[in-house]
Each structure stands twice: as C-alpha cells, then as structure tokens.
Length: 247
Image (cartoon, one colour):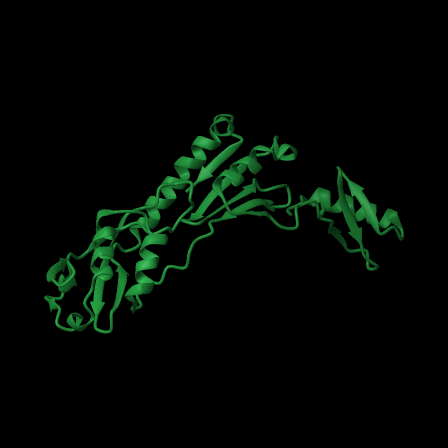
C-alpha cells in the first residue's frame, strides 16, 4: 500500500518512540515493528476463507439476497461460463476482493467425439438431451437399425442413408440429415438449453457418434440465458446498484 513521505517519517518516529513495542497504530491502521525498527503494515484477516459452494441459480440468487453483512458494499456477479457463476466484493482498502459464493451446474457426462454402441446412445439421447425433431429422428434410426446393413450405408460424406426395420419383416432406407440440431443438457437446469448443430455419424458394428459443429457458439447463448435469469432474480438489488452482473 502506498504511503506518503510524511506518513512514513511519522511512523518511523513512532517506531523509535515505541522503544520495544511490537505493534503501533496510526490513523486506524496497525503496523508491526521488528527488532531492527523496520515497519510493515498489518493487513487484517477479515475475509472469508472460501466462497460458499452452490449448484443452482436459484440457490445462488437466494444466498446473495441474504448477505446482510455486505449490504453496504458493491457486489459483482461474474458469469464465468455456461456452468459457473461467482459473486465477489469490490476491492477493499488493501486491494483484496472477497469471494462470497459460486455456483456450478451439475451436468451429465455426455460422450461426444467418440463412437459408442447404439443401445447406449439410445439411452443417452433420451435421458440427457431435450426433445427436438432431429433427436427423435436419430432415436428412430438407431432404435431400428439393421446391423448387417450399416456397413452398406450409402454415404456421401455429409448424409448417410441406412437400412432400418420399418415393420415385422420389412426394411427401408432412411436418410439421416447432417448437421442435426440437438439440445444436450449443458447448462443450469433453470434456463433454456441451447440448441446447436452436431454432425451425426454411424459406422459398422452398430456404433454412432456426434461431433459439435457450431464452434462453441452455444456457450454464448447459455451465458446470455444465465444473465437474463440472474437479472430477473436480482432485479431489485441491481436497480439500487448493490449488484452488478458481468457476463
């Protein structure tokens, strides 16, 4: 912390006068004097040891609303990613910030960029993806796929035509479009899950895979959705300038 020459001189004089005292006070601040008479500022340890850890946006909002001991301080909420937000205070007199809370979304581990068997994929598409037209088409394809026909699929590098069972004894060709629009659970449950494009591919051995094809643009949409949700939930505190949201 910067001190003027006059302040330094005064503290040094006080240190000499202290004659053996280890702690001296000046203008409400405390300084430590070592055996050689050197003076150093004592920074108080009055910050929380760690932020409160939460897992939902609703819990995050409610916690911020109840921090009465910080009601006279400016609090900043930073949306760090599609699945994390933190709340911290303004810099104090010693250049420190206090991290009050953070929330991390609990998300399923969705396999991407790796081929998996269609039975496992069927479960994942139903349990870890929002319902979309393309998701339902993929489920229809992998749920009725004829194993011996996969390696004979008509593939132009973009779309694949595969043979699927359409009845008790009939088989028909279904063209799988690419890219497909899917909405995996990738952000907090309280906000809308972004729909983005994926490349869906099949290979012999009854295996399939999806590959992200939107250059992570979905993350910007998710962050915007989180910002809108927090802004609505903390509207009163934002209007009084107690809370500032940074996305």
